[in-house]
Image (cartoon, rainbow over all chains, first blue to last red; front, side, top):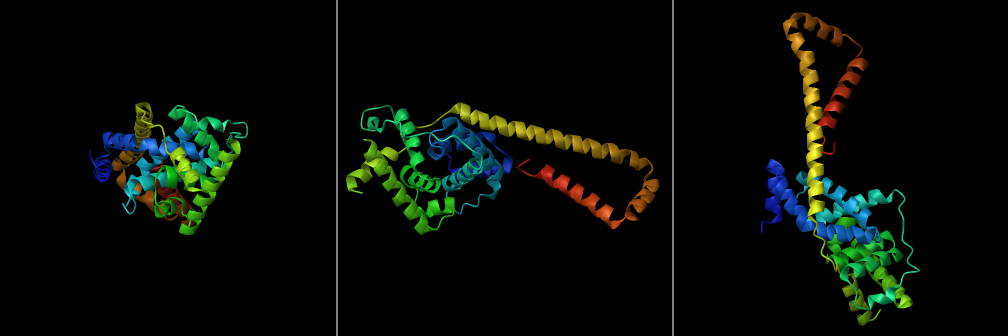
Amino acid sequence: MVDDNTLIARIISNGDQHAYATLIKKYQGPIRQFLRRLTTGEQATADDIAQEAFLRIYQKLDTFLGQSSFSTWAHKIAYNCFLKYKQKAYHQYEIDGFDFSILEAEIEDIERDLIIERLMNCLDIAERTCVTLSVSAGMSHQEISTITKFPLGTVKSHINRGKQKLIDKINQKL
Amino acid sequence: MNTNDDSFLNSLLQYHTRLVDQHFVDNIINNIKAKNKFRLKVMAVAMFLACSLAIPLIGSITEEFSLFNAFTSLSPYIITSFLLSMVGFSAWLTNENF
C-alpha cells in the first residue's frame, strides 16, 4: 500500500487523479462519518459537505506542509466546510420522540449509527465535534485542538461535558 | 459518570459502518475534471482574445507605439484602474479555487 506522502507528491507534481482517488477511498469513511455526526444524521447533507471538503483538499493540497497527519489536516478542512455550511439554516432532527431503548437491543450497525447521529443533537456543535473526534475518530486532544483551534483545556472540557450530556440523555431515555 | 457508563458510551460512539462508496469517489474525480475543463476553456478564450488583439498590431507596430504613448499620457487613475483590473482578472484565472 502506497503511503499518503507518496500519493500527495504524485498529485502535486503531475495532478495524478488516480492517486487522489486512492486517497479519497482511504479517507472517505472517517470524513463522512465525522460529518454525519456533526449534521446529526442528515446523511445526504453530510455527503454533500464531504464532497465539497474533498474538492477543497484537492485544491489546497500543495499547502499541506506535513506538520500534522493528513487525516488531521483533512478533518480540519471538513470541519471548516461544515462551519461554512452551518451559517445557512439547516433542519435539526427532533430527538425527544426517538426510542433509544433499541440501543440495547441487537440492531443493524447502520441503524445504530443513525441513532447516534441523531443523539448528537443534544450537544452543541463544539461538544459534538470534540466528542466525535476524540471518541469516534480516536484523535488526541492536541490533534482536536489543531482542527478546531480551541485551547487544550477547552477541548477537554467540551469532551467531558459532551459525554456527560450523552450519558444523561441515554439514561433518561432508557 | 461511572466506568460502565463511560465504556458503554465509548463503544456506542464508535463508527459502526464502514463507508466505502466508489460512486462517491467517481463524483469527486468527475467534479475535478469538469472544473479543470472549464478552466482550460476560459484560458483558451482569454488566449484567443489576447492573440486576436495582438496579431493585427504586429503589422503596424510603429503606429501602435504612438497608441501606447497615448495610453501612457492618460490620467494615472485610468492607467491604474486598467492595470488593476487586468491583474485581478489574471489572479482570478490562476486561482485554484476558480
